[in-house]
Amino acid sequence: MGLFSKDIATLQDLFLHQLQDVYYAENQITKALPKMIEKATAPELREGFETHLRETEGQIRRLEKAFDSLGEKPKAVTCPAIDGIIKEANETAGEIADKAVLDAALIAAAQAVEHYEIARYGTLVAWGQQLGHGAAVALFEETLAEEKATDEKLTQLSTRANAKAEAVGADA
Image 1 (cartoon, helix red, strand yellow):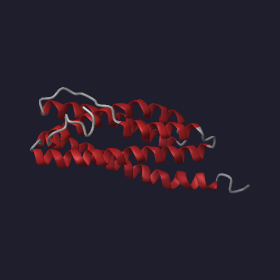
Image 2: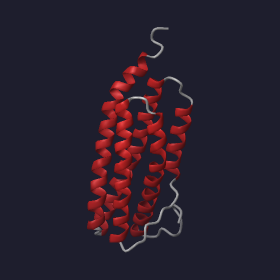
Image 3: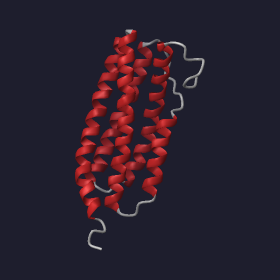
Image 4: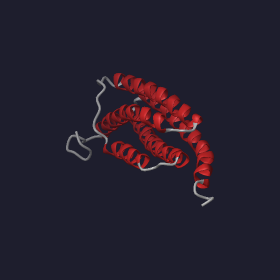
C-alpha cells in the first residue's frame, strides 16, 4: 500500500498506513542510533543517544501493542522520509572531521528525526481519537511525550555543542 494509492480509501486506512510507516521508521532509527553513538564525541551526547536507543526499543513494543489493540499484526511499510533523514545524516557526518562540529551535526540530525516522529505521533493521536481507538491513542501519547522530551534535551545539548563548534577555526 503506497501513500496516495487506491488502497487508502478511508481515514482508517490512512491511520493504519501511518502506523505501519512509523513502525518502519522506529525500526530504522534503532539501526541508525548505534552508528550515532559511535560517532558522538561528547559523553553527554553519547549517553543521550544510548538512552534514546533504549526508549526507541520500548516505543517499538508500544507500537506492537497498538497494532494488537486494533486487531492487526505489526507490519512496516517503507518510509522514504525517515530513510532520507537518516541518509542525509550519515552523509553529512561522514564529511566532518572536527569533533565539535560533528557533534553539532549529529544533534541537528537527531532533532530532524525527533521532529518527524513528533509530527507522526501527533497525527496518530488525532486520527486515533477521531476513530475511537482509545487504547492505541494512549500508547501514542506516551511516545509523543517521550519524543518531545528528547527534542528538548537535544536543544539543551545543542547550546553547548554549537558554542564549541562555533569556536572551531575562530583562532585562524
